[in-house]
Image (cartoon, rainbow, N blue to C red; front, side, top):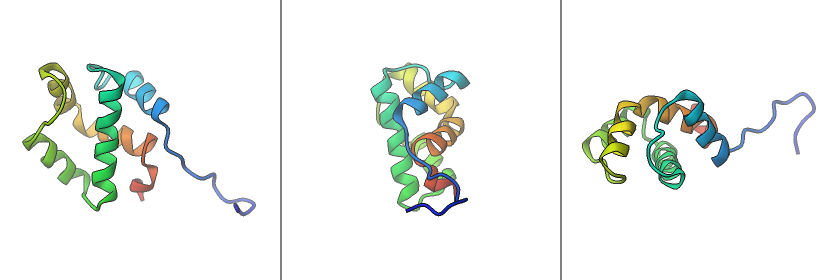
Length: 95
């Protein structure tokens, strides 16, 4: 039950994540399901207690999905992609 005057609950939204990636011109290579999988993977790492820096370091050392162009696109735009994932898929990790 929400209290009167309390802020609306944040929610995760797959479609808004893809739309935000497109609107920001980052990580546009690869099919939507692969892009979504990456966002959820980053969120899972953050929910498990990793910092953004740790997520970046883990990815840069071990890109484990997508073809070369998708990996290059994601690597160059990693921090913005993680930021978008946090805002659209796992806003609870922003606290």
